[in-house]
Image (cartoon, rainbow, N blue to C red; front, side, top):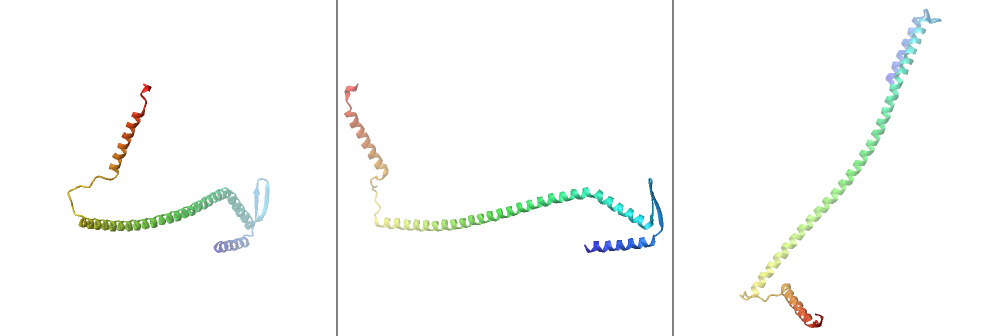
Length: 175
């Protein structure tokens, strides 16, 4: 900004010096119009008209660039909002992942504890079986079959006996 101000001041000083040195009167003709002005004034008017014309020609480009800049700023702000949303989402997913990792570590510890307990129970069971084998003598006689299989055969026998009784109770005169 200061460079622009210094440059404008230098140009103004040069223009004043130019005007003081070129005071000669010249005649300017344009179609039917004639004017007599100082050479410096004529050149400064021509310079001013050139600046105005170049400014008018550059206005459409400035408007276009302003619109582009506005669109880019809007796009930038929407992308920044999306970036913030993604960062928030990443933080939530990271927190959720960390929670799952903690749960996994806790589960792994529980599994290790349960495996240790299972190993202790298996050792205690084996020890108990060994003690029972020492207490009870080994014999060649197999114990009678008990358990669910024997109970199922007893229940089946009861049902077949009941079916036979029902068949005997049916009257024969229906035939």
